[in-house]
Image (cartoon, rainbow, N blue to C red; front, side, top):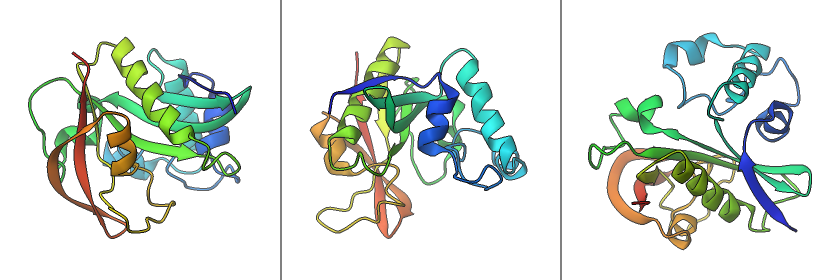
Length: 190
């Protein structure tokens, strides 16, 4: 595999990775942390995809995509924390007042897993944030140790993968997902 990571500006490729099989399904589309809760609850079925299409077309792409050749293999959501619900989170603390970027979702398509795509996505998201002027990238992965993590709910990533990418533990949180605590991990880009 020759994995390349690029900004997620092609909606059809984003849809291939995070879109539902049925256009009327109410799936996340990686909007849950990106938009206010009220809007997230109001957007249903195809409206969710249309919202993401607008994000792909407007200014800064909503994340990055990993490609194996021309085939989209994975997705990572990354954006300024101030533009996400992490800016107001009661369970995930702010470490400082720097204008950090949040990396909160990593998804690898079936057929591309166990091939290093998530590692490429983390590195690509960091480079994307760096190119946008981010001083720090922050992630909120599961701290599962050696315990098995349900891959359906491991979308924030795993601590060990962020450690391999050079991130350091910055803070504990009161957030728990799939039975595992989440932590704040950071990579200083300054």
